[in-house]
Image 1 (cartoon, rainbow, N blue to C red):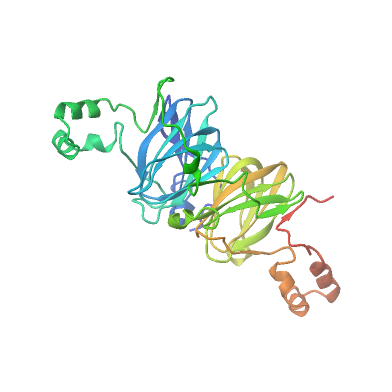
Image 2 (cartoon, rainbow, N blue to C red):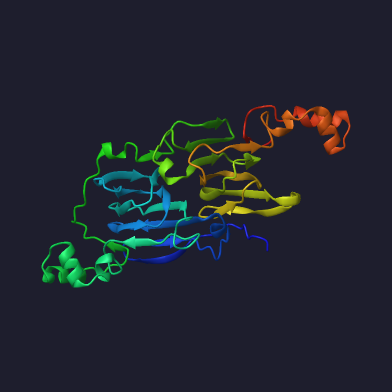
Length: 357
């Protein structure tokens, strides 16, 4: 059975007047299950508070829009309170407890991409809430909670009875949350829009790669990531991951066209990508994108914590430039002049190509 690689939008799972939680389902995007990848988005309105929770999956969080505050508690560690803003990437290993808060008018939107190989369900995140109507306090009997936390049973009944929210609540505008500390960002997050560029091609595009060098915590997550910004009408060179890593891509801004070629030289996907789309390129399949005139940005995770190894099929470093002329002539069944014309093109190291003049 052929896999459906067409890009999909997230669907709402739960929410209320404080915000909402959206996820991509492996029933609609089968490559999530095949690749053991989960994907979800959290959207918080003003004063929206995402209650403390932990997950069955290691993740990378990426702030798509807005500013806010995140609370992060690594196993057996103190709480770190981070100011977060658009472009921030945060590594969230197994066992980490998080909460999220938005005190501004602009909606705060956070993307989560992660590994579900150890999750309850392949291709889906399962969250465990510490509080709320579906939190752990509601599952234990009053006796167990009373003894575990050394509380009077009447206090326990108050704690459990007050928890009416499910996952996300809206706080009173006068309620004061913990103030973020600048030093807590160190080693916990990296702003991909402000970090040094790994690739910068004039009128082509720019790349920032998130790996164990600039954010060591991704080593514990087991994933790498990158932010790619493709200029208007520019092209991203056809290429494939040659270290068996999956490419999971979320379109952050703009739009463009994509083609994916798989086994036996068959084009398995040709479509238009738009902001909000998520799509996955299988291992070793070749992918190329061309941005619309407005350009296109995307955030991707790679299923390896270090810089992925890509083979590009155009440009000076492509495999075509490495093959000898006679091999190219024989392979394409062309004369020497045609081979020379082919080999003389794309002589730069660029992986992004500006639009034709």
